[in-house]
Length: 248
Length: 184
Image (cartoon, rainbow over all chains, first blue to last red; front, side):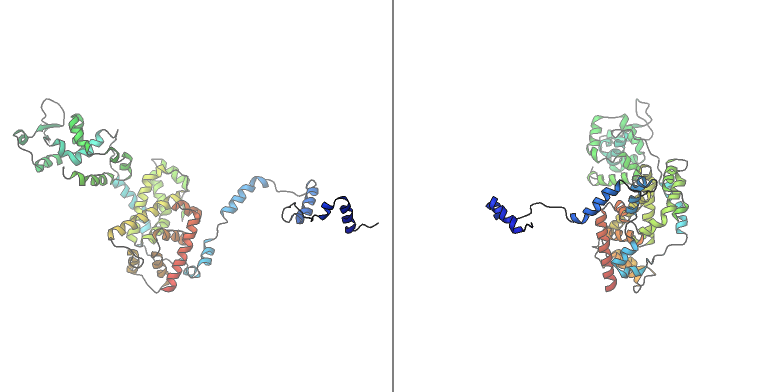
């Protein structure tokens, strides 16, 4: 006997009028296009175990590398990019308008090597910042301050020592008169920085050191590596100091 | 041209050996001088200035190559130094001239116009003038892409800027240059 929808509904009404009165709504959800893929999935599951397809030897070992290479070389071609951006620029074809002197490139390497050779300076080993190095800078900039009462005499006549570098009390100071800047500078200029630095180190009077170094900020003194990279480091540092030191 | 020289790894090894340091350095110069020169020339316009920039750049290479960490390509590192030298040079020129540089009166535009071969009617010269209207860094991006055909990935390491920013910058640069050429 054929059963119709109305028969089923009537049957339900007899059992549960409540259920018979409710609307039929589907509450379950499924992945998009699920039913489009069901057949292929089922077939693959059946055939996978029986696959006769061959894979080239080493295929999977090299797969990752091949994919990476493809990614790296997949960057858009520069010419195509330009064509898309501007037909005008594309038409100019990288025409070079600049000229270069004849033989320029042939001689450039030798010019640079010669320049480097001429800039090579003797590097004085720097043991530590608080040693000769700081005194050398201080001496060349502010030597007048603490050395004002002495002249450093190249004749090396320091009484009572055998030091090769000596100092004697300037006769004009002994007489109670002050030494002029010109006089002091003349003698000071005749000395090398190393001589002044050695003198300071050997006659390391605390007061002199305090005066000499008080104008120096430890952190502002250039790092010794800076001198190896840029020969203008000392000049630049002295220029920074000179406005504050010039009145001393 | 670069193919007839040893590869960069070999050059770096030779440079580390005091016996072959100078020879390796000379080869590095010869291998890369033209590329780096033209990159500099397009930035600073005049040959004498490009020559100064190039020499200063290679001197820095000599001093710094022992510390080169090889986490980037040698050429990328060289390009970065050259670019920084160009930008520093241009900044110094601007400060020295103590003139506010507007797009039309820029010193570099005037230097272009002063070139004995300058011809305002030729499109390739218009291109150079158009390039001078760009901010320095954007002009660098344009040069590296348009003339040197540098991939954005490598450019990102040279200029230490993201690839996305570089692409945007290049695209804007192309549009600005095209507008200039069409309107002048």
